[in-house]
Image (cartoon, rainbow, N blue to C red; front, top):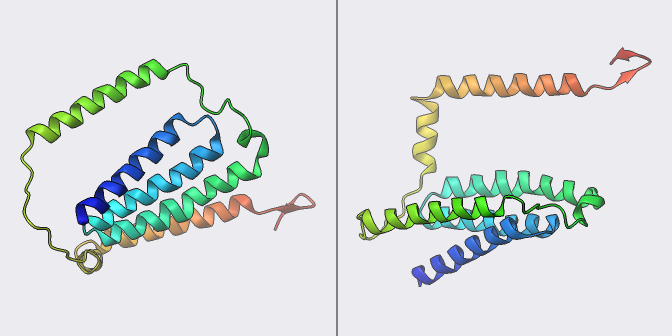
Length: 166
């Protein structure tokens, strides 16, 4: 049963990624990207990386993709055009895809994979302990960096009234 679910998720992910790559309509590509990113989150969940799957859903599907969909839907002129995906580099991209496919198939056939039984272990407790013990300094530096970026963005966006900054 697990293999069937895995194959369904893989087919959904690859099929929707192909729609993203070959769709001429920007809105269809955006919705297909939703399915593709959701499938990647499902694959992470099946591998036991529950934290990474949650972050995939929160950041990419919940944040970035919703922003892309809003941008596409609010700009009606680009959503209706058939020119969103020019095909002048299609032969070069086909050659690159075939090279990457050959490399992936070579890896699949030549690398010995462990076929033992997988055990599920949550990753969030270990990650939380590492962030708050061994990696506390980089964690705090990144938080201060993000805070200064947020303050800088607010300072840039402030509106002016009568030529004076608020």
